[in-house]
Amino acid sequence: MVKHVILWQLRDELTQEEKTEVKAKIKQGLEGLQGKIPGLLDIHVYTEGLTSSNADVMLASSFTDEASLKGYATHPEHVRVADGRVRPYTKTRLCMDYEVS
Image 1 (cartoon, one colour):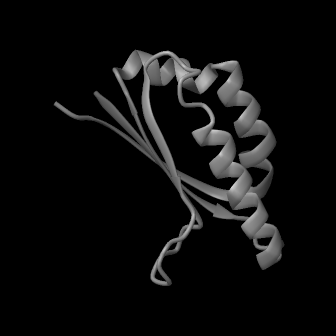
Image 2: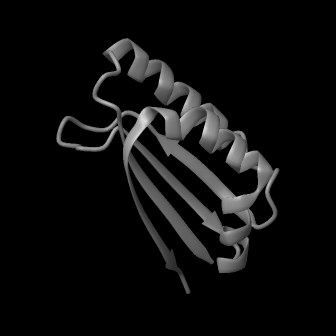
Protein backbone atom coordinates (compact mmCIF):
# COMPACT_ATOMS: atom_id res chain seq x y z
CA MET A 1 0.00 0.00 0.00
CA VAL A 2 1.14 3.55 -0.74
CA LYS A 3 0.26 6.64 1.31
CA HIS A 4 0.02 10.05 -0.33
CA VAL A 5 0.05 13.10 1.98
CA ILE A 6 -0.19 16.71 0.80
CA LEU A 7 -0.04 19.95 2.80
CA TRP A 8 -1.16 23.22 1.24
CA GLN A 9 -1.01 26.83 2.31
CA LEU A 10 -3.69 29.02 0.81
CA ARG A 11 -2.87 32.31 -0.92
CA ASP A 12 -2.31 35.27 1.41
CA GLU A 13 -4.66 37.56 -0.48
CA LEU A 14 -7.70 35.42 0.34
CA THR A 15 -9.91 36.74 3.14
CA GLN A 16 -10.77 34.46 6.03
CA GLU A 17 -14.25 34.03 4.59
CA GLU A 18 -12.81 33.09 1.18
CA LYS A 19 -10.40 30.64 2.81
CA THR A 20 -13.26 28.93 4.62
CA GLU A 21 -15.16 28.57 1.34
CA VAL A 22 -12.10 27.37 -0.58
CA LYS A 23 -11.27 24.77 2.08
CA ALA A 24 -14.82 23.40 1.95
CA LYS A 25 -14.68 23.14 -1.86
CA ILE A 26 -11.28 21.43 -1.78
CA LYS A 27 -12.56 18.91 0.79
CA GLN A 28 -15.76 18.23 -1.16
CA GLY A 29 -13.95 17.90 -4.48
CA LEU A 30 -11.12 15.63 -3.35
CA GLU A 31 -13.18 13.42 -1.06
CA GLY A 32 -15.68 13.14 -3.91
CA LEU A 33 -13.05 11.17 -5.85
CA GLN A 34 -13.60 8.14 -3.59
CA GLY A 35 -14.84 5.26 -5.75
CA LYS A 36 -14.02 7.03 -9.03
CA ILE A 37 -10.30 6.29 -9.39
CA PRO A 38 -8.87 2.78 -9.71
CA GLY A 39 -6.60 1.85 -6.82
CA LEU A 40 -7.69 4.74 -4.57
CA LEU A 41 -8.42 3.04 -1.24
CA ASP A 42 -9.30 6.05 0.88
CA ILE A 43 -9.06 9.83 0.78
CA HIS A 44 -9.55 12.38 3.55
CA VAL A 45 -9.09 16.14 3.62
CA TYR A 46 -8.50 17.99 6.89
CA THR A 47 -9.20 21.72 7.06
CA GLU A 48 -9.38 22.52 10.77
CA GLY A 49 -5.82 22.47 12.03
CA LEU A 50 -4.76 23.57 15.47
CA THR A 51 -3.36 27.09 15.90
CA SER A 52 0.14 25.56 15.95
CA SER A 53 -0.29 24.48 12.30
CA ASN A 54 1.36 26.32 9.44
CA ALA A 55 -0.66 24.59 6.72
CA ASP A 56 -4.29 25.29 5.86
CA VAL A 57 -5.31 22.00 4.23
CA MET A 58 -4.04 18.42 4.45
CA LEU A 59 -4.84 15.52 2.15
CA ALA A 60 -4.24 11.98 3.42
CA SER A 61 -4.91 9.19 0.95
CA SER A 62 -4.04 5.54 0.37
CA PHE A 63 -3.51 3.61 -2.85
CA THR A 64 -3.04 -0.04 -3.64
CA ASP A 65 0.40 0.59 -5.13
CA GLU A 66 2.65 3.22 -6.72
CA ALA A 67 1.16 2.61 -10.16
CA SER A 68 -2.32 3.51 -8.91
CA LEU A 69 -0.93 6.70 -7.33
CA LYS A 70 0.57 7.64 -10.70
CA GLY A 71 -2.77 6.92 -12.36
CA TYR A 72 -4.52 9.17 -9.83
CA ALA A 73 -2.19 12.05 -10.67
CA THR A 74 -3.32 12.08 -14.30
CA HIS A 75 -6.88 10.81 -13.93
CA PRO A 76 -9.29 13.34 -15.52
CA GLU A 77 -11.52 13.52 -12.41
CA HIS A 78 -8.53 14.34 -10.20
CA VAL A 79 -7.10 16.84 -12.68
CA ARG A 80 -10.50 18.60 -12.86
CA VAL A 81 -10.59 19.02 -9.06
CA ALA A 82 -6.93 19.99 -8.80
CA ASP A 83 -7.14 22.57 -11.59
CA GLY A 84 -10.51 23.98 -10.52
CA ARG A 85 -10.53 23.86 -6.73
CA VAL A 86 -6.95 23.55 -5.50
CA ARG A 87 -4.23 25.08 -7.65
CA PRO A 88 -5.84 28.51 -8.20
CA TYR A 89 -6.05 29.10 -4.42
CA THR A 90 -2.82 27.62 -3.03
CA LYS A 91 0.59 29.23 -2.70
CA THR A 92 2.60 26.26 -1.42
CA ARG A 93 2.35 22.50 -1.67
CA LEU A 94 4.37 19.86 0.13
CA CYS A 95 4.03 16.18 -0.67
CA MET A 96 5.22 12.94 0.86
CA ASP A 97 4.49 9.57 -0.68
CA TYR A 98 5.61 6.44 1.10
CA GLU A 99 5.07 2.71 1.06
CA VAL A 100 3.48 0.85 3.93
CA SER A 101 4.26 -2.83 4.25
